[in-house]
Amino acid sequence: MRIISGKYGSRKLKTLTGNNTRPTEDRVREAVFSRLGPYFNGGIILDLFAGSGAISLEALSRGFDFAYLVDISKEAVNVIYSNIAELKVQEQTKVLNTGYRSALNKLKDQNIQFDIIYLDPPYNKGTEKDALELIAQYDLLKDDGVIVVETDKRTEIVPDNSYTVEKTATYGINRITYLRKEKTDAESNLSRII
Image (cartoon, rainbow, N blue to C red):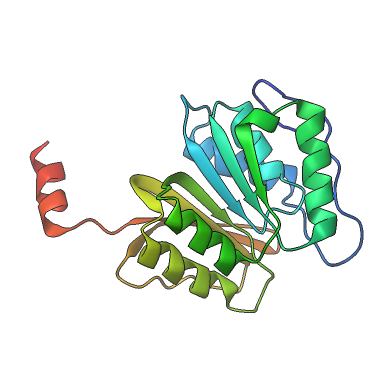
């Protein structure tokens, strides 16, 4: 696995071994960042279920200021720290070795909002639905922010009225769903005027 583009383009990353993880393929990461950017002038990303940290490190390579990486697995966190050290981005990262609910609660208490939140939970467990509800409840997404959800291709994200589905795309066994905050009537009217 490697960083695809930006400041750290082509730098190799360590990955997790075994069958318990699914690293996001290079082509999927490239498609996601082509849709979102592909390059950025700052911003904060939250990477839940971060695995090797490739999504966040790609974001930093492409211009994000800071990344929060969350994973409950100690093995994953060890790989994340190794990749962070390899790129020397310790000052731009915060790693939380905890479950997603605990992490979201801590971030709420710190009044942090994110430009991008990337969710890549274990497939077919409904975890993404719970995470999306907590993100909305805790108001963790900036008004112009995006949530990217990676799921099995058969899983359809049906958001509550907090979000709208902006786009979906399928890559092999993966489905990527892009969500934005649902605008209030006042915001919708303003955007039409502008």
